[in-house]
Image (cartoon, rainbow, N blue to C red):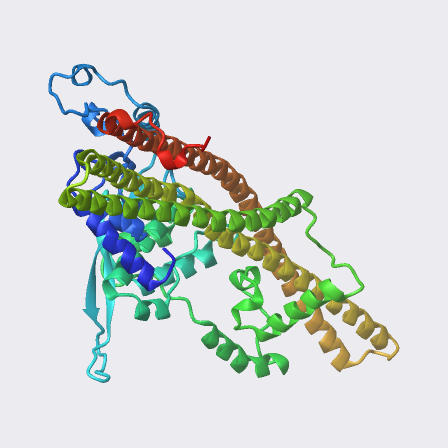
Length: 556
């Protein structure tokens, strides 16, 4: 996880030596040597495996030999071999909980009758069409095979596969953000160009594959997003993604700059479509609205007058403040969890180093012709240390799986911030339209008052008054549409907060219980190892077990 390259090299060398040792008891039957290395290196493939298949504390047939209770003499007629060992705490408790497999933040649960299972696999490198050769290197990209199984009727099928590249995932994420404002949309994986250059290509692709699978499964777990047309088209339609990519900010700002002179000189149309009115001006195409909303934001923060409409939901404001505190606590807990995982890994590595040292000591004493009992005891302790080291590493892998929930929810807080920002932007849009209506009405009153002073009125003033009244009508309609959008976003926030709290309580309970039971179960297994060592060394020590060495005796 962390540390210098020399330390990592030394630890992995020791790990390889420990895994190559042939012990009296076979390595744990549920985790292979490759699993150990994958877990220690943080490989996603290890943690993505099913709990029922990989959990080291799963209920399997457990005999006395595996638990370390075999007779020290190895006699087939011993009493221990004839007895049926009772199940350990780990085998009794963990087996019961396997049917209640813990789920990560916003991953699929049994709360839906509809099934939507997604897997991402088989990455393939594809040459970029029409790409030119630069410095002898051809441009290419990676596509991933996305398999879906569902019984949702809108998908018009049960099993289908498509190939998508990361750019398609970005388009999906952007379209969902536009269409489902106010929802807690799981954040997509980042497009880390630097990481792709630094990491080994295979490792980077595998990490991205796992991240994409986790992201799509989170979308499939969302009660609203799983029914969306955007996700359905992404998962089902073969070939080119039928979703239009979102125009980048630079292009939108350029379009806005082109339209700005016409708007300032009255050449642009003042009529807004419902979609334009409902969306905030931060899209960039309407710079006049963008400047107005910026002015309104400054007025709200620094102006002396109170806006016509403000956020009055005290319950929401209190929850928002509590969630900010929760994020700080999650960050602190995640950092401490990382320290715990690192410490457990170091304990396992150091314990393995101790086992190797005692093995070398036993070999030396045997070759040097010293007391055979000493060599036997050293070998016995060495075997116990290596076994314990393996259990420590298995325990650490399971601890990471449970404590990773903290990191998952910490990352999910980004979705909450975006949903709350949607709410704030929608409110700002309503406030801006209301201010525009009030300003235009005030200007109409001034023009009408001035026109009344002139007999017959001024044609120019009358035309301006007519234009302003039309603008008031259009802006009023836009305000009403924006108000409806704001109320919808408020409803989305309310429902999402309820779902978030319900799932967080469930996931945190499973995390804490799973972590505690993992510690207890492996502590029992390690205790069994050392109990067996204590029994065996007692048999080897002969008459020296109760004797006090002369150099420790108190002089008379």
